[in-house]
Length: 81
Image (tube, rainbow, N blue to C red; front, side, top):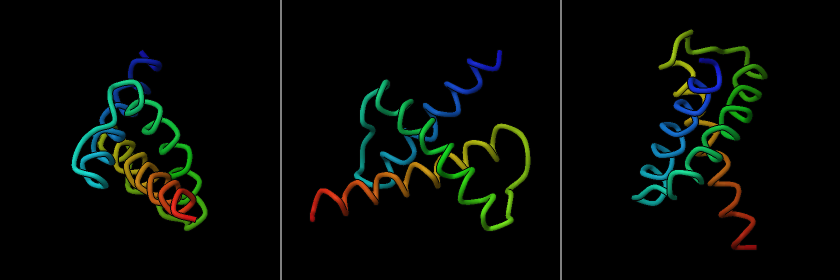
């Protein structure tokens, strides 16, 4: 069940980041990867700030979404340079 939860959170967060940053998703596999990596980045950011949005799947999706948006934003900055 843990792997399924991890993949669902990654998929939803990656899809939301795709919608927010460019108006569309990146494809299922890319959305999952983006969301999972975003969860790592978001967890690191929120822990560093000493803030946590709460438990459960909605908190995990929120943290992963914020991390995925930061990843997409950073990748776009690097791509422009």
